[in-house]
Length: 251
Ligand code: G
Ligand code: G
Ligand code: MN
Ligand code: NA
Image 1 (tube, helix red, strand yellow):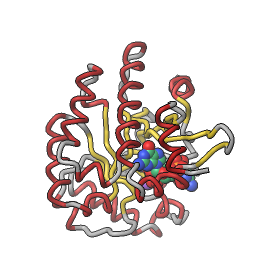
Image 2 (cartoon, protein in one colour; image 1 turned 90 degrees about the horizontal axis):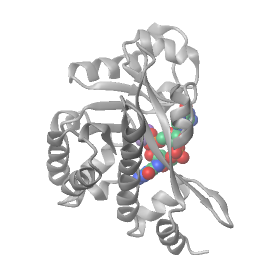
Image 3 (cartoon, protein in one colour; image 1 turned 180 degrees about the horizontal axis):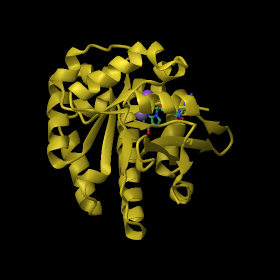
Image 4 (cartoon, helix red, strand yellow; image 1 turned 30 degrees about the vertical axis):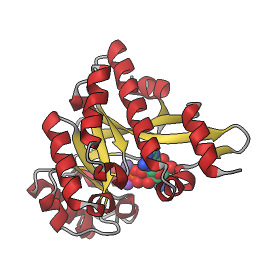
């Protein structure tokens, strides 16, 4: 079993599937978006999780292929959904740092949207701080181009790893996603959550929307709402669902 060869084969044979996890407005309960999350069921090995192959793909020059595959599949899914439903939500795609150092990444995304006749407002890109700082100048340019065309940009896993508040000023973003580790550590009394409270206040000051990741309980959801968090994502609402189930779930 050679993981690199298996990834290439899975790309060619469309064995990677995207599942979609809802992002819910805490005020109205509307679904604002779905995060696309890659899933792989290997013919003989069974399920292989992203944690098992995304880091490998990053190290072995295969992540670019996965980024473009996931983007194309997500845009195709939006195109299909728009044929059948009034679609008031966006689809949010995880992309690697490598994508943001490709000079023509934004152009390629915009071209994919145009080819599928999908307006840019239906697409969002999720990036981590680590991805942004790998190539700051190129990333800044890339975000600017994407946002000028109407693609939303979400900063993923906020608060982990390289967190430096200076990046929030340097990069133009739309949404800050609070990493699920902060949500998992929330205390039952609202006043005992100064870090989450401060991150939400920071997002507001910067005119960013804020999404809490990993919401697993109704108490977390209620506290986040009271703290002024805009939206939540997590098992309390739904896990990532196959496309057909995501649409059923909406009803
Ligand atoms: O869905 P799950 O919790 O198993 O995802 C595990 C990790 O893999 C997360 O960090 C998530 O961001 C990442 N991941 C999931 N889907 C994709 C994808 O399509 N592209 C990239 N680059 N990462 C993904
Ligand atoms: O790194 P990123 O935020 O893209 O990772 C998303 C990952 O988090 C996915 O693998 C998804 O399956 C997982 N996830 C989604 N909701 C929850 C949750 O409520 N709790 C936990 N522990 N993981 C979640
Ligand atoms: Mn993400
Ligand atoms: Na995250």
